[in-house]
Image (cartoon, rainbow, N blue to C red; front, top):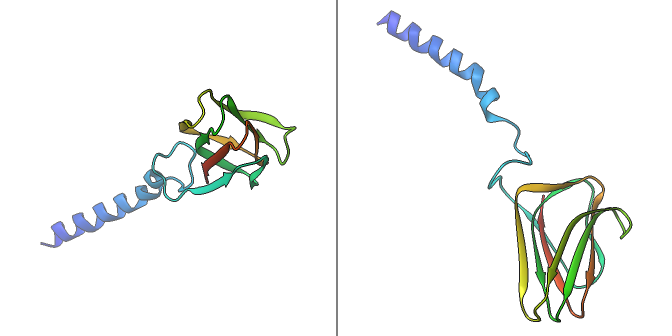
Length: 124
């Protein structure tokens, strides 16, 4: 009985030492369904969020034909373009979901064209 108890204790100690290796960090860019996601919505040009983050999905709602959306990794419309979306039909929407989220380091700025277009961005 003592041998079985010692074996179980040793096994628990060995497995306990490897748990942190398999757990990984919580906020990984390659994690699917990794927890909460923030949403930001705009119907005009402007900042979606500031600071570093990951964009998981973008939805463009087109009230007029040929609505477009450009998202910059910046606090204004002058940084690096990270996402471009277009919808040619009025009243339709275009949704992009990224299996590997788009990483931004400065923040996300939305540049919308087309009358009454709107965007929803899911990020963390």
